Image (cartoon, rainbow, N blue to C red; front, side, top):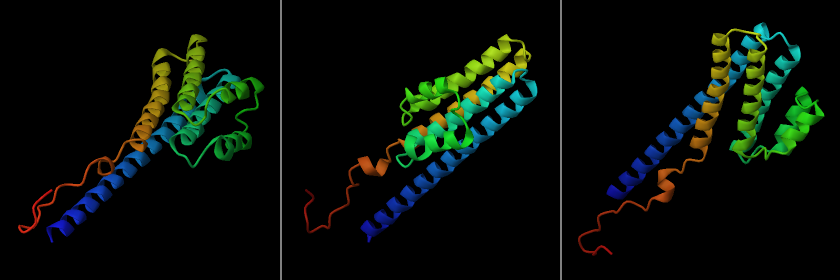
Length: 180
């Protein structure tokens, strides 16, 4: 009887842990998407250089798609990244295509590199005087918030569940059987 209670308790806590991880990952994913949309919207009304605006949009979308490839075994360069990039024209520049091909898309290095590229665009436009320093700070915060949320998603995805690595809890042996 106590054993079945312990099994039910373990299953319930495992389910609760899984639910919390899922909800946290969903919230972080929403944060990534909202940060990218906000950054693009603010840049759209402030950048004076349309090519730089397009580069920022492209790098933020690459950040997002490469993060999916790195966080799950389901998606990779062939079945998501290349198709998404071709469908949305993200790699029309041959030099950028070469830069991205030099990166392992299925590692965290890919999305963090794309984040650096986006930050470089924002920095260059600030240096060109497209917008005042407070706006520069806002754009940088949007991009780094997306990176922070992706880092949390990666941490949750690769977090070892406690029930997998622990030994079973000891169960009291019936009085007529000695414990090992």
